Length: 344
Image 1 (spheres, helix red, strand yellow):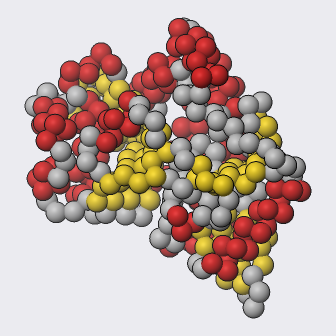
Image 2 (cartoon, helix red, strand yellow):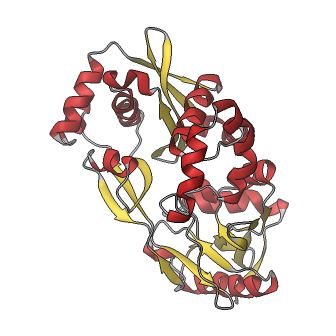
């Protein structure tokens, strides 16, 4: 029987999510929960594609139609996510989704389509984009064995943090998290997300998302919004108060997630992506001794267009970043949710 590719309908959302959860390359960003949050918060138009044969799902491609002043009109899989792209049972299903994507790119008159693949098995044969690496750590053995697998310098920082009287707790309250995270984005020169984005993530993902807070003498000094997907734990949005750097709150926070995941049966700690260019994030993650691999992102270019470089390292954005970092926090928090739509 031939493969039929069609838009995802509401009555097939449960089948879509079951397919994503059973697929070995699936991620929380392929679930319809992510679609719901991104559409509600940022207004991007979902163009989700489902490949099936005789009513059986054989592949999925989460897509959004996005317009921004910086990138123009694009198809993206998927906005504000580190992973996306095609999930398919076999090459036939992948090629069927690829063909439909090419057709849609022409019909929608986009400048390009971008697939944020996590694995080379997802690649559709478009132009590669070398931009990010990702870091993962297997969670196995005892807690002490896991700690010993971390390089000496970082292990010493973790042990120091454990001696500083820090504690942690899970919560669904966003007050402290938003205070820390939005201030951190301003320091980095990045526009702020709207608070509604984080609220919707916690609501739609339910028990598969939570905020971990790190406390010192009752004050929250670090926090990270974290996803659980199957046997994986993914810290996603995290920040700390730089005034407490001496207590090593970041090292404590991520180690606490790792050891808690180990106790609760998680198999993999996914530390997420960092730009290939050396940065504070890259350096911090690389010191944990985790497995690092390049993310095989790719773009389908239309009509001779070039893929835009929206990286903060692009010299064109130096003045904007420098100015943004000097603005008052209340102003960046107010203007950020408008500007963040430009860099999905």
